[in-house]
Image (cartoon, rainbow, N blue to C red; front, side, top):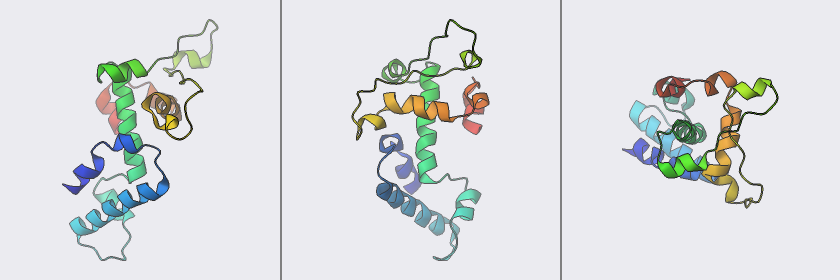
Length: 145
């Protein structure tokens, strides 16, 4: 129940200050300690790995990337699909023309909240992925990679 609450709408907390992410990470660590019945001073990272739980910052990015993938292939909600725009192929034959890249949002977004918006975050997160992961078209394979 606790992990479900941490994962619920965690794409809304993308790029929040680290102090707030640490609070969520502490809740996840405590839950892992509770589930695994380990001592308070034992390392939590091996327990999280054994439970197949990603650390909170990676979980947030993972959820946003899942929304981006669904938006690119038209499986997400219509309003999300409209926010993601695939870059048009250039006139010249470039190596990057075969890749599926996203267009960046306008540069006039506010620095505090505008960078956290899905429209601005999608291109930056998508380009951080390797080209072979971006080339995957099957959702389950993309999710596993």
